[in-house]
Image (cartoon, rainbow, N blue to C red):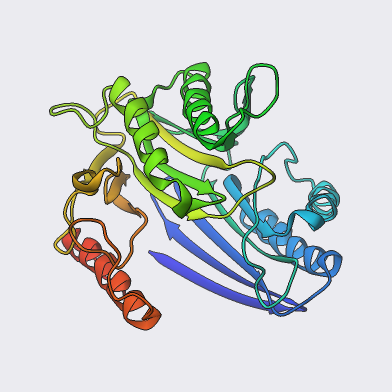
Length: 336
């Protein structure tokens, strides 16, 4: 069963989607700011609503993403920290800060949060930490573990960013492997990545080559081995880095506890690896009789990975939605 709730208060609009499972409820919160609103006012209104929702439903966050300009980052995070502290929420929860084109001129424009509420009332999501990737979130479920590592960068052991985009990408994927290993996971356990690149089109080819080399070394994408994870490449940045990545990994102790199936191609698009991109079209995660479909970055492209309908954003948007719909229909679902 799914429940949707839309709340508009002050300058913030909050959408809450809840999906019921046998032992937990899965929540997705999306908060957006209307118009050019001062960052402090926007953050106060947004986090007041989000915090109230987290408390009301006993939501334990797995992933939290904030969208805004770097210039207001400290101000927004301070507001978040104060409001979460006042509501007794876990302030060790890490966030991914993302800067792109400002929405309607606003400096702080929104939030996405994914979390769960255990029907037993037990605490099952905790903050974990390691030297290579910093803080992450670990969900200890019935027969499985789910790890989210946010905002992993190409930081060298000396604490400095590697010099140049290729070196940063190399170190970023190396750090992902080290971070996974620190918590008992490995690259074959990765089911989803979100890769953020400041200049995506300038060196997407280099990114693909570096990613593929790391995946191949870990045994991914080889016939009979684990599939490439679902993934999305997004042009934005957090600070001064060339790239960063959010990673989701799963490990199951029992075959019946969690069923993971890659979606390598769709009725409208062939395998992305045919044109050099090492990701699956999507990933199906089956848990307690229900499935969550993670769909990878999808665009108006042909079978060679080349963009179609150039300078026609309306048709490109339509073709993108049709490709998403095709994956959902292949899985027995729909855009509805």
